[in-house]
Each structure stands twice: as structure tokens, then as C-alpha cells.
Image 1 (cartoon, rainbow over the protein chains, first blue to last red):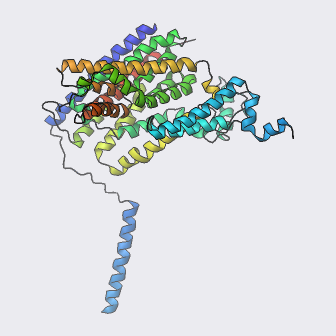
Image 2 (cartoon, rainbow over the protein chains, first blue to last red; image 1 turned 30 degrees about the vertical axis):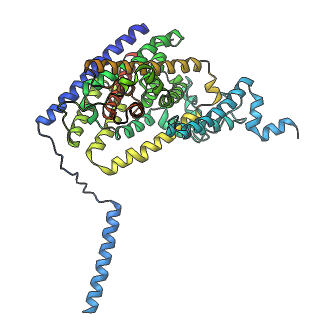
Image 3 (spheres, each protein chain N blue to C red; image 1 turned 90 degrees about the horizontal axis):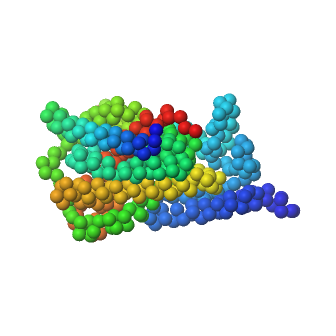
Length: 75
Length: 418
């Protein structure tokens, strides 16, 4: 393939593809609005606890247990 | 103790006398160039994130040469850093043995072999870049941004035929010309696909020049656009819609799938970029912090360091490197020129509402060129804000370069060249 022809071909195809992508982006923008996909207020719920959370929960459990045993001794 | 014994003890200096004087001079020159890159990176003239590790790597690799050449590729001298030619022969058995030997000797060889030569580092950088991109900027003006980006790809298409005049075959010419797309990861990816033997010099030239765009493009903008037009403030587009994070996530996911359908060859890069965008918009904070922080910065650090250690005198003195230096700078210059022409075109179409300086951001090099555009405009009119439009052109520049990389790899990869 001649270099100039190849260059022009690739440029031409790039223009077509890029404008198609722009059209898709514009179209998707209108579509998501029409479908009412707006979930602006939604917060993602990550239910898997982190190792820090587990440690904190363990520490809280220990503190609660100590407090309970002191309370029972006091009784 | 004779001179030969001293050369053996101080091998870094001794090897200077054991090789061709031109090579020795190049080593010394590269040591000083490496130190200069650190200085210019620190001063903010060049991109510090790449240039500081690259400069130190370049200076050190050219100092630490010794009488050691386990694969007998460099006339008895070498380093303990990396050997990009290991496993590059036509003999598969020898390749495996050579690679195994070098992986056990050169400390950066595992990073080169497992992240550079397969394009993984490019994808990791793109993943990080994606997590910093807000597609809301391109959603505001999709066609304007894309048209500017298409103009800003001019350098790639002008340089491709010119490179063949310099004696490069069409695949090599394509790999060199995509430097005009100003996207480091894309340059790495395309050169690995089309001209793996030129991967090292092309990658080095590309990143050197991408660092220089920060310093050079403001002069091009001032030369092409008069102050009166440069200081035009930009209003947000009429009837501009606001998109929620969820809507952006949907649009990015669909765009990723569509682009991968169109360009399967560039799918690893496309997925990496859009995965970054989707992570950003999905609200998964731990992922976002990982990819936009540790992953991006670790990849950039090793990218810079690896490019530096690949700049040894043997590679740089390759006769094919000088034309690469010329073609790389031509490609970026013409792309900058094209981008500003695109800016002028949109200025004319919008009847003066779009500041043509935005055009330079179409060259891509996220987010450097957008920052350059805003900086130049702010100097002439501190109240003028063009950053949102510039970032839209920036993101479009990434998309158009991904399209070109995909097209080049698809159309040219199977062409038989001599």
C-alpha cells in the first residue's frame, strides 16, 4: 500500500469513526435522560467489611465484654 | 599496578577507553543530558513525573557500564540494568534461554519483559489516566471536541508518508508518526504491534518530546493566535445538560463496548481507559484511590525509570534514531499546528464563541495541553476560563488517537515488509 494512500485512508476512516463515537455519545446522553436513569442521590453500598472495620468491631466487642463483666461484679 | 588493572577496577571509566570514541562521547553526553532532564523537570520546564526518574536512569545507566556481556551482543561491555534485545533472535530455543539468563541477572529485566514488551505498562497508565478524566466535558460539546481532535491528528498523517521517504517501511513509519497523537501509552502500544525492533528509540523519542510540549506549545499558540483572540472568554454551551455520575457510567460503559467492537486490536487500551472512567463514576472509592494514586504513580515512576535506562549510548547511537528525532518533533509540531487550525475552524463556525486556543488541547497528552491552553489564556485575560472546553478536546484527543492506533494495527499489521 502506498504511504500517501494509506495515510489518507486511515485519516478518512478515523474521521468516520470519531464522528460516529461523537454521535453515540450525544445519543447516549439523550437516551439516559429519556430513560430516567438519573440516580444522582444513590450511594453505593459496599457491604463487604474492611479489615479495619473488623478490627474495630473486635475492639468494641472486647470493650463491651469488659464493661459487662465489671457491671456484673459490681452487682 | 598497570593501566589495564586500573581499567578492570574502575570499569565504568575503563569501558570508556575500550569502545569506539564516538560511543564513549555519547555516554558522557547522555550522562549530562540525564542530569539536565532532572534539573528541567524540577524547574517545571519539562514534565517532572517522567523526566526526573528518566533523567537519573539515563545518567546512571551510561555511567555504570562494565566489562560484562553475557549474551555477546555489545562487544564485551554492558550493564546490570536491562537488555531489551534478549529473546529477539529468530531462534526460539535460544530466545528462551537468553531471556531466562537475563531475567536472573538484570534487575529491571522483569519489569521490562513482563510490563513493557507486552504493553501492560501502557494499559496501567491509561487506567490511571481514565480515573482522572471526566467525560462530562466531552458530553457538553461532543462534536466540537471531536472535530478539534481530528484536526489535531494532522501531524500523524503528514509524518507517515514523510517517514517512508527517510527509508522506513510503512509499518515503521506508522509507528513513528503516531507520536503526533501525543499519547505515550498509545505510542508504546503501536510500536510494539507494528515495529517492535524500533520500540525502544520510538518510546524514548516520544516521551522526550511529550515532555517538551509543555515548554514548546505556548510559543506556537502565541505565534498563531493574536492576543485579542486569545483572550476571548468562553461561555458554557446553550441548553447544557448536567449528567449524574450514574449517567456518565452508563455512557462510558456503552462507549467502551462500541469502540471495542469497532477496534478489537486497541481493545486492551480502550478497556483500560474506560475502566478508569467507570471506576471514577461508580463511586467505589477504594478502587478510585488505588488506580488514580498508587497504580498510576507507580506505573509512571517505572515508565520514566525504564525509559531512562533504555537510553544507553548503544541505542541512541543507532543510525535510525536521528531521523526518529526529526520525525517525532515534526509530527508533534504539525499536530499542534493542526489543533490550532481546528480551534480557528470552530471559532469561525461558532461565530467567535469558541476560543481557538482550545485547539491545542486536541493534541491530547492529557491533561498537559489543556493546562497549557488555560495558562496561555490566563496570562492574557485572567478572567477567561477555557479549561472545561479544553478538557473536552483533550478527552476526544485520546479517543481519536485510540481509533488511529486501532486502524493502523488492523490495516498495516499483516502487510509484509522487507
